[in-house]
Length: 308
Image (cartoon, rainbow, N blue to C red; front, side, top):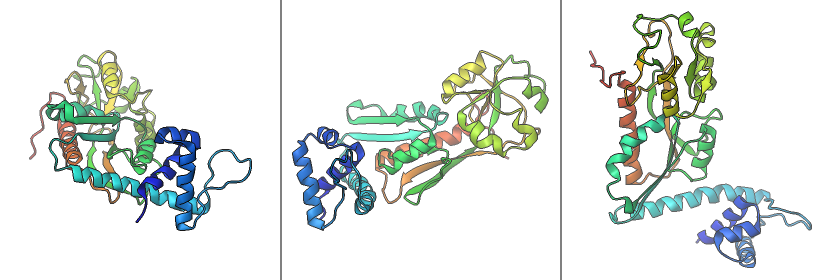
């Protein structure tokens, strides 16, 4: 039977890169940690670490690198099993750690509000970082899931991807903006005003636009904080580029659909392959999906357009 504890010690040693730091994190002595690694090697007849005289730091052998890849997945699966075993205990603490894109974070208040009635048994940690960083954290087992765009580096076979929806990008301005009340505005009029959006707009969407639209629709201001973007558009003539209506309905949508063809931006859930979500995490995921659908179909007044 595999010794998960010693495998965990090996993983922490590699992660920290130092026997001293690993021993501190594991709350054990360096000598005990050294013995555990040696026991692991002797038991399976492998050498995991290079031990050249005078070498500083941790350097893995080929066997060590191969084992590390499996250990990381194995420990993540073990944690998932623990969560599943505890899922039926209504008194057990519920913990959720998720990553989410900066604009999508606006969905969280309405999702979290109904479930915080008993804060004693509830812990939710939310991380808002770049997609590539989020994917690394999913692979490391640090996140239950990530909701956002696919990173530029793509995804690996160890990550499962599920479509949440697609947001048609729209232009938003303050109610008394110079372009409001003029019907459908053209690209030249839009080009004369500053544009603001999240960083993913310029890097992922603008390159897909027709060449004549890329310049006029490039964001001059990029902020990965939706609340700040709304505040900027509400207090200036800056045009906000976003797939979401302002939750407080302080902005008006410019009529541009027939003039500026902007592709919908797909958004996905990313999970570690083979690791089931806990019932609590699954409930949050489904609530986020419902919130996304609502947010992307609302108009500036908060109404959901009727479908023919």
